[in-house]
Image 1: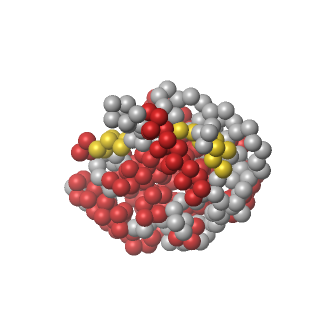
Image 2: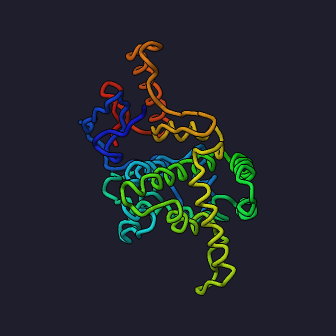
Image 3: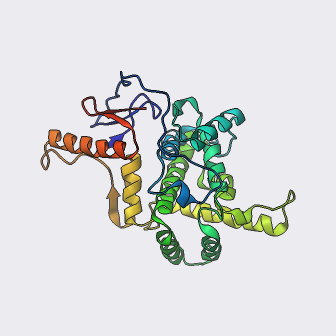
Length: 302
């Protein structure tokens, strides 16, 4: 399974077996940032993600996926304004800093702003209108089917971003009661709906009644997507596989699909051979993002 090492997302990535053995920080001296792709705000998603989700944006989501489930009011409480400006500046210039220097609240606020600034929103105007219609259906299976068609009709990079975001919302919501965070699917829906649905945001300073109604419907849509993540084939098998591979989480969906990025049993593949295959994959991925990967130490220096 692809695990994040004990040094934190901002320090390294490391492949590990069970139990997880933390990697030590890289001994080599590297600059505290390097250019691996700019994340510009206010431009179409396809311009930001030309091939796939840029490394800096991916790291933000993964930190939220890892730490968000235990943080009270994550995505609801505001981030530090000064830290937000600093992080946005580094993202805009393609610099990846030590992400551990930024709180999950700052990261969540920056991510919400990025989504809110996407022209026509992440779903697009037509997609938003379709979702507003779909949520009115009385048949849950019909709702899931139509949402599945809509999601899988979007560009692949949009699908990847959506499955990572809603997978993160789902794991946060599932831990809300146990961790006493207060971030149920309903609370998350209220907190993030304006970032996903631009049509529910008032143009002026004063919200009109129709804006309030659209906001409530948008919140219902968000809650439905969060509650049904992993319950049905909502995002499509390929996207669930992508989510499991990138986050390292085991995901079980309806129809008994279980997705996990893990080592095969010793009885099928020798552990050493499995480790070599893992290293090869990590080497390819790190080179694709322009990162420095130490094969001997099996760690990535950030």
